[in-house]
Image (cartoon, rainbow, N blue to C red; front, side, top):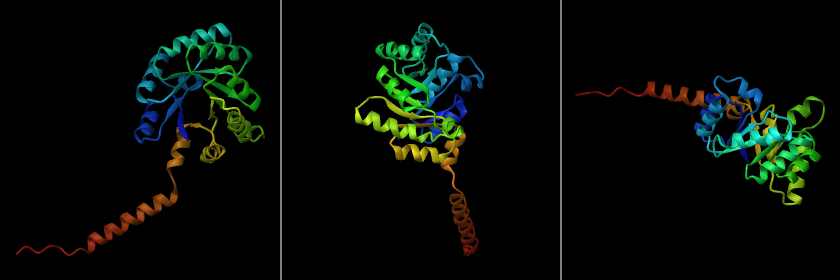
Length: 222
């Protein structure tokens, strides 16, 4: 399973990339707006740091604007993936943009029906937002499980990219369901690294080592 970071913060991206665990990055207008600098410069810096796919979202909602933005964004770096929302004009744009050879991540997917349509339109990635579904009393992982099954049944090329991840358990559930990718905020990836028993065990090892060093007899020089 591939792990992406859902952020535009270059410091966080660099930190996890240096660990060797980062396969890509997803951004959106909200995340970009939190960072200092020009939009294109932020995207280019992220693309230089991460060799894998970097999703950059359009802000237009009509076909012509989305296609124009997709063409523009694709010139920022060779690993840019254009994010397009699952709306009627968006599906039309997905068809055109994907046929231009630009990979598309269809975002804001909340049902298997939407995901199926996105895949048929030509999406390279389909992003169900599971946390937001959980927030309103639905089991978001149901959509992931359905899409993995449907895409497998019909050998569809689109990858299931699980978004709106709230906690590490979501990552494990997505992996169990067979999703291709999970994207998460830095704080969730940080929690995946940590475990209290690891900290306790490491402290015990170091304490024991320190005690052993104190018991060593000093060398006698003749």
